[in-house]
Image: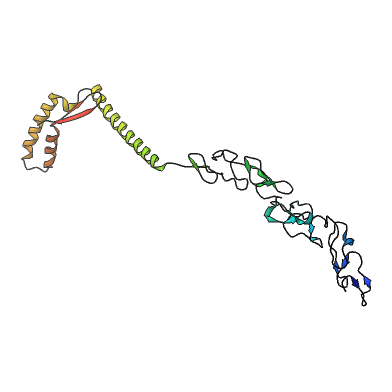
Length: 256
């Protein structure tokens, strides 16, 4: 019979035991383990159980709960380990931290102060968060609500380039540089001709002498000698070109 022992069931269970043949041990009753009912094992009184225990028999709290009647839920303990069933403190094991990233305190319920995040709240939120440096998630540092203009990514640290505008700008710069180089080359050439005297090709005397020599070459073309017949033709055509320069540009004309 429950609550009794011995073959004749005439001996009541000793304090702290209950059940058939007194084989069960009483739970953590608030008034002491010896106070439980020897028949049912129920703990009397209110509060019924010690912190960390619950139920009529004041059995140990399930994992993740603590306190009187196990009504309190454990905080954000590192790696989801269960807290102390009596005090609710998250344990510190080996070199692991007490709390998950973003939380502090013995119960790991206190969140990081605004502007900080991560393990032990040692990291600082990005200044490029749309909601300012306090607008990031305490767990992972992600900007809440997006990024300011020109930035992207979880931490808003990546620059958001407008690639179309960059390409157009680069092309415009290259074209401008080419134009400037061309203008400088022709301007320098023109100024060099002016400072070094009149070009031989633009001097009428030299042109006349060259025309005379060209006539001699034309006469030699008809003679059967080993020479390039196109050379004299090229030179004759080149003699017809007249170059002229001013302060800003260089030009040429073909004399017919």
